[in-house]
Image (cartoon, rainbow, N blue to C red; front, side, top):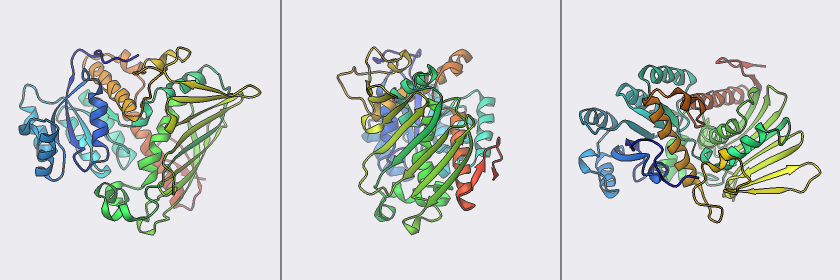
Amino acid sequence: MLNGEKKIARPLRWGMIGGGRLSQVGYKHRTGALRDHTAFQLLAGAFDIDAERGKDFGVNICMDESRCYPDYKTMFAAEAKREDGIEVVSIATPNGTHYEITKGALEAGLHVICEKPLFFTSEEGEEIKALAEQKGKIVGVTYGFSGNQMLLQMRAMIEQGKIGEIRVVELQYTHGFNANDQADKTSDAQKWRVDPKVAGPSFVLGDLSTHTYYMSQLIMPHMKIKKLLCDRQSFVGSRAPLEDNAFVMMHYENGAVGRLWTSSINAGCMDGHRIRIVGSKGSLEWWDNKGGELKFEVQGEPSQTFIRAMPYLDESCNADERLGALHVEGLSDAWANIYLKFAIAIDAKNRNDEETLKNLVYPDINAGIDGIRWIENCVRSADNGAVWVEIENKNPQLV
């Protein structure tokens, strides 16, 4: 159980890029990082492309005005001159800026925590991975939902053979908030998401389903995709060539099959984020709307519902529990869990503690690159007429 006691020697000196007043994700970063006040201390920020608005925002969250910077380059240069300068930075900006800012942060000697999808191409990911290794720094990716501890319960039960050999993987992340184009025209946070120059080669595949894809890999770390087929649509025509709905069929190396539906035009749907894993003995199912519950079904036996924080759960699951079984946890707690693991990873990297890094389960640079490569394959499949794409190292082939 987590109760706020320190896991590292001192809080890390932390800065933010983006995540200001108009951001949809900035508050999630801050509540995640600062939930355990022993892990991070927010000291600096370049919160907004509008420098004055960013400074005003920083002051309104009780920041030192002199450390509210007009842009990230100014922040890196100024903080490098301070004895108490930042040592890690979170990037909560539109997708098209991630690569440049991450590279600049690493070259400035900073650890990086970045929004997803990490970059536009896997080649950029490999370049940044090499740079991070050269600089001895961590790059983490904020797959925020993955901090839900019941996912670790699923991982443990699959490893223990509770559902047998995996046969079917059913993934879904849908909502209906973009069923029309109103937000595309009125919301700054939405406008860039449907602009290929800023969002990259996809909309909902990158914005939504990379979360679910990573979560499936977290749950089933030994399950690798052999080939996939993606069919994507732009039901709101102005979003083309970016999709607002997509279906992905996947074949795994062990013979299992998978299906993913991602959509922002699932009209009326408030929370369609589900994962179901079907094995030869039984099945596991998790739904974000009831994130503290896990359904376990064994063929021929009564269905069971496991409840978060109960003593019958695996130790790896309960290690991330915070509030006790009587009280509901949610997305802010999941973000807090991954931010705490980012802090532990950064601290371990600083101390050259490779053993801790090897055993720590968190979304690292490799997870980020894997997510990019999955998007690349989906886009390649869809753009070639929804054909199967064979996954072979870095160069997927059409089949």
